[in-house]
Image (cartoon, rainbow, N blue to C red):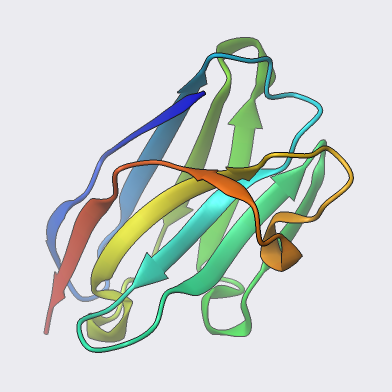
Length: 121
């Protein structure tokens, strides 16, 4: 199983960016897919996930980020709007190894390689 993330870059505060992550090696529709991020000097944190049509967000991104998926393409998207400098981080897509675990609670995940998002003030 592999996850390939893309879409990171450098933007100014208030702008938008969309991340994409495409999975291969299994059918992803029964599994959560989502995103974590790790800022410099900080631990990796959960950002958002989607289970079928139900989405979950960490509080700091609610109302600004939207997660969606295209099951036919094994792809999850993270539309990030009103970006802030504190959103600067490496963003990792992930999916649990089992169908019954929610991504935000799962200890066993497949991980993508990470894509850097930098938001300047």
